[in-house]
Figure (cartoon, helix red, strand yellow):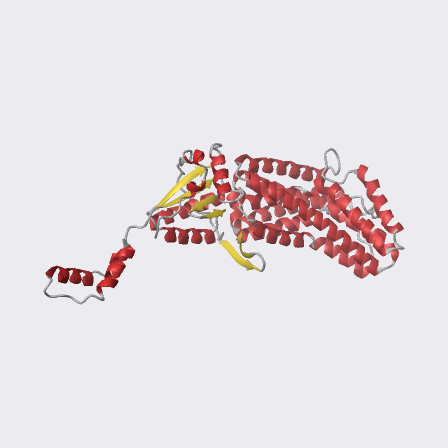
Length: 468
């Protein structure tokens, strides 16, 4: 109707009124009085929105708040909501529609409007959905369900979505940045960056990896060559960081694929609780019973590999090759010791609906911060040519802090996952965990200084490597 009206007005501008024809005169008068905008206006076309969500998903809750405003501003929108955590029959529908759009199922919320699809929710996505609704309202928008196989279309009966809860407190808006080669990437909330940095920082202070690095440098330093120490240390760090990064990427791929299953987050939280309790036990009873440390049975093999590096000192390429092989083997051995925090972190990212581009950027940030403490130890050895030592007392303190952080994150994931959506909540979680660790150390030192790893040692220095 709109385009037809505009054409009539355009035509009438070129017709000279004929006073002898009263009907033509009346038609000309009406066409003159009616504005082109009024003729062009009409009721917007209905826009179907297919919304797959999960009960307990914080980003789904945020999108439902957005839906309220979207429906208020655009009454022509029709939202078809499908809950997939607790309604198993809706999961094949989400998979079928995702496949029809050529997209993998990587999490919820997953939204389909016209020819477009969004995975996850941020303020930037909300603006894009609003623009799409306004655009599709001007013509008969394609219905996403038309892409699905005919035998499945009749199953798309929407399930009602409950009223949206109030939005999470604190700044948690989306952040979209332009990255060369990647283009515009939504990297999630500012709190996600902060969580990444804090978890990586705590994960970096891992007694297993620090012990191996210190032991390696203590042996290689006997070569009296700063160049050899530098190259051996860099080779070790590059190989271990690469393997660790691939391990984390694998975790993210798995959790992104199954993140629409509500019980996955509960399972991960329970596993993290077990990791946390074992680490806290190691503070009190180091290496007694179940322990997330390098098994003593593995140590002779590590010592042998390190001695092999020194035996290859006549050939620098052979030395570096032996270092790379040793680093690969050691990283695989120590993964049970280091896996707790990466499991939690990748689950948080998957639950937040982080895309592949955002994950790559956050993983780079994670690995840089994770390596900071090892780079400090390594740099000190290169500069001073003196070996550092990681002993049991330092290992116990690191186990306490790491266990407390894992315990706090696991409890938050179980009972209040939205707390990590804000910067204030993230700081509070880590602050409470680290503060509780300091309180435990202080009380231990006051009540039983003889067994406290924070108390000054009176005995001679222990043999390097005891903390591994």
